[in-house]
Each structure stands twice: as structure tokens, then as C-alpha cells.
Image 1: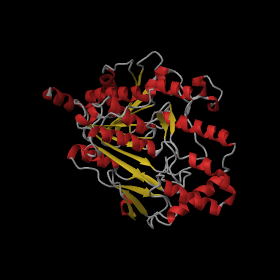
Image 2 (image 1 turned 120 degrees about the vertical axis):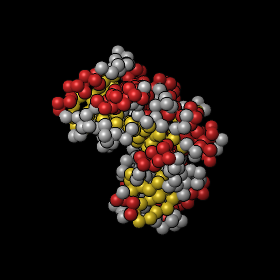
Image 3 (image 1 turned 30 degrees about the vertical axis):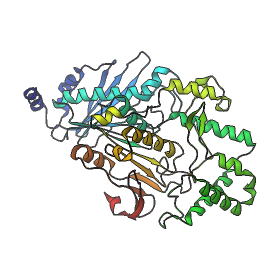
Image 4 (image 1 turned 180 degrees about the vertical axis):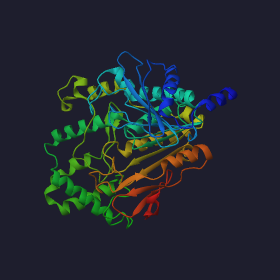
Length: 456
């Protein structure tokens, strides 16, 4: 097998030219792609080879994929899979110059963007099947092109892409050696449930907060914590926004002292921090202090439940949706851990789309499964990041001061290939010449320093 691989490798041109394309296309098209696989395009893209293919595991499926292949002399032996945002629906050409890179549209191109696919098979493609199948196909094409399988495989994604990574580690633990899961949508159910709860709270109390009042509440919450938070955080974000009675009492006093007109909103405000429990099962985490609560939103499609709008939904409707969507991964990474897989994950404490409380509960469940956080940290590095919203910016107390992490790809590679644990991670600080540094759980300490690492 080694001799055969070497022979194939010697037949490959160092950098494919236009004259090489017909032969290369024929070689790749000869690869057997299961699940209705069909290569539709092979072309040069800079010094890389772009391979476009589709997969159709069911008659209703249509999954578009793009694979980027560097020249053989530049290939580092790695395959990187990349995730999507929202409901997918678009596929991009990913290429980092040295690794084979694969991406798909999750099979949702034919569904309107930002709308729940209503067909069960397309939901399955979105939730887990498309990511797995694009990976299987990519590995075969990589082997056909380079003469050998990838040495190591990695996946990186945020939001929906973070969920993709978790699903891969849960359902297909052999697909990837290392996974980066940023602000993952661990439970699609929570977004639906939170939006539903906000509607019910408005109806229950017969009042809500205006846009200006919401801003005033956030300002007061931030001011309360500025009295005790580290100097670098004051006026920017809240370091420890997890609610306790003492914190809530202090915040409410600050709110009504600054805004007496809000005095009649106390019970409504306090109820925002309670978790939503449906039939004894937690469906959505409560609010963290300082986090936006004006526009709870949802991907749930009321038409999926036969409703005109989400306000009509009952607890039974939410349960029914949860039972068919298949986008809720079990908190079980036993097989991934056993085969030596590593995962880096973080949640943003100002994230309204994928609440950190829920991501952290997932991490805690995995830790319990391992016998504690210290044991879990051998393969799972989790970070709770203050000031970080869902995207680079947000509408929370600190307006999303904290931006993208620095060097996660290098950290996951070093962990998998060299045994170097990730340690603290630096996050860019928007519009400031400094970075926020966060260590992983257990402990998860936070500090800041100047922005020397920003240039890396």
C-alpha cells in the first residue's frame, strides 16, 4: 500500500496547470462518492484545485460541497472542515494555502435563508448528515489526489458551525481529530423557547420595556458592576454576570434609583432570569445580567407547527417541534474522548442567540460524564468569555466589546499533534489596543493586557 501511494504521488504535478485539468478531473470523477455523489466542476483557483460536488442521500436531499486542494508539494497532510451560520444555504471555497479544506451548504440551499426547513429529511441533512457526508467524500477525494488519506482532520465552526462540530464529535467521533466549536447553537430549541417565553411574559404582565428603557436597564446593570469589577472591565462589560439574589437585588436598586419610572417592572425583570422548564425538562436558560432582552428571536417556523405565529404555540407544540428537529446533540462525547479527540469550545457571556448558560450546562454535563472538570480538561477546553456577544458586536451591556479569538487553529493542532494543552486564549478587544485573556475551566480566570498579540 505504501509503494502504491508513493507511485500515485509521483504522478501528480507539483502545481496543476490548465493542461493538467482534464486528467485530474478524470481521476477525481472516477472516485466513488456514495449518497448520490456527483462531481460537477474541477477548476484551478490560484495555485489550488477547486472541486465542486453534490450529495443526495435521500430523494429530497441536495447538498452542495466545495473542496479546496493545495498543490501536492504544499499539502501539510491535514483536512479542515468548516461550518456554517444560521440555516446554512450557501457554500464557500475555503483555502488556507496548505490544507485540504471542505465546506457544504448543509443541504438547505433550496430553503429560504433564515427559515426552518420543514421537511424532516432536510432537517436531518442540516442537523448532522451533510457535515458527515461531506467529510467522508472529502477524505476519498483527498486520497485520490494525493495518494494517501489525511494524516489529521480538524473542524472549525461558530454558531450553527459550532453545533456541527458537536454533532460530529457525538455522532461520528472518527471523522475529526480536533474540533473548534465557537458560540455553538447547542440547542435550537432554546431560541424558539426564549422567543415564546418573551411573548408570554408580555401577555402575563401586560407591559414590556421600550427600547430606551431597555438601554437604561443595561446601563444601570453595568454601573452596578463597575463598582466592584476589575478596572479593565468597568464601563465595558460585566466579568461575572451569573445572577444571584445579592446581585439581582443590587442591580434592581441601581435601576430604580436611576429610573424611578421602572419601579412597577420589578417582577417582570426578575422573571427574565428564571430558566424555562417544560414538563420538568429545561428548555431555555434564564438571562445573564447585562444581556440584551429586547428582541428574543427564533429560527422556528410557525408553519412547521401549523401556526400563524409563535405566540399561538403551546408547551405541547414546543415539545413536538423538539422531537422531530433532531438538532439537539446528546451530552455524550465518550467515543470521541476514547479515540483521543480534542475539542476547544467557548461561549460569550453577552450572547443572546446561543446563551452561554446553556453552552456551559452542556460542558458541565460532559464533565460529570468524565468524573469532573479536571478529567474533562484532558480533552475538552471550555472558556466563558465576558464581553463577547454572538458576532463581533452586539446589543448587550458592553455592546460586544470583545471580538474574535486569536490562534485557535494553531492551539487545536498543537494539542492534537504535540500534546500541548491550549491554556489561556486571547480575544481581540474591539477598538482598543489590548486583548482579553481567558483561561479555561476549571477556574476560568480573566485578565487583559496590551495588544501585542493582535498582530499575530
